Length: 161
Image (cartoon, rainbow, N blue to C red; front, side):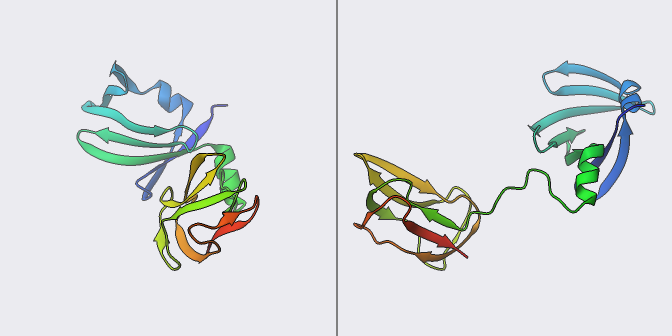
């Protein structure tokens, strides 16, 4: 019994693909991540632009057209049918001080919309400056400290909505 996969292209088109389909594919590797493919006597030039192996998502360029492709196997389909998202992590709603220190800078304001990895604040601890970046996209609900404040380990610094 061969394994089957569901390929979703640009979140609009889905089709099933099996291991036997893969073995019957007329593809030649030209160089790293570049391929020449023949399908129904038509040539295609394909290139893997980006690959996220853990999320099973790829950006593929075929004859100068770019496509977002997601691959799901039987386990992925089962998990989705159960209403669970694979790889989903806990949402962080608060930033707390990991160690005692001094607040040197606060880069955000209450109500400000931030993106993941935006700078939030700088905490000086043990003569080192520690930059805190946003763990997720969100809106700043509250800022529990001010510049120049000394903080204890575990003290609330910033809260998200």
